[in-house]
Length: 431
Image (cartoon, rainbow, N blue to C red):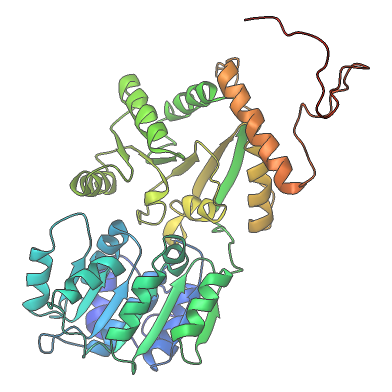
């Protein structure tokens, strides 16, 4: 099927041609016709399969051209990075029209964004919090909004946006088209869809939580943090294969430390992004990574859904995510737009539990590969070993509430136990 068969008009076909997009993806084939027909739609598809264009093309086609000052469509996404990404996608597809797209996000002053809305816009792409902030200050006339899109709805639920979403549902017209798109569809998102969608058409092009087929996955068993760092350095020395790499880590401290180390060993330009980085710093890092000036991006999960860069060759999970659906979104940063990609995961003894849980969710076994001989494997420091042991104990208690811990079952010497209210009869040595 072609975009012409989907009845996409010429100005948008020209924009697609300019972007080198010639063939619709499965989610686009299935979602565009009902959206063009005005239906409410739930779209569930793997990350990187073209969900944004699946709702952007029919939405732009319905609006056609600029009309008046009040916005007529609202697209809500969970993060600043996604606002920028989705707004850029809309602007790319509408380049041969006069449609006006405004991006609203936090981390910067609201005045300039409010002035853009007041000057006239057709589509607002926003985070829920910033939209309500500017609306409550009286800058957004909402009565003309006839199309509402919730993108990455599962992440919105994870980030606690439900109160703001309910506020928004109350201030925009009830007679509107509603679209909900997500890579996963957990119960919380299903309950959300029941609140505001009217007899929706559900489109699920792949089983929920399934990674993109073009991503080749594997894992390494690595005993500790420092050995992981040695393995990471060894892999990144291969500049020919690892052309553009995202390294995902669990914490901001990990991100900073790993980023500084990689900058010292000179394996190419490196940038670090996490929630403590300023807005401009994060946007500039993303822009440099997108443009190819940066080879390695070290990130916490703040960017797992905010990066749409087709040329990412590898995703490296330096640490296994504890929110298992984040694994799907992390590895979805590579293998985008039907390209091939690679996802490598470093797993210590405490993280093997989480990998097994992930394999259950994605319904496949991730193969293990051996660590190259050139990589130095160091002994695990005592403090890290104890931390891993505590986490393993916690995992076992979660699986078995009666489990008392690794040291509980040691046999006591006869007569060494204490009776209630009595002393053991032995004095402890003073320290």
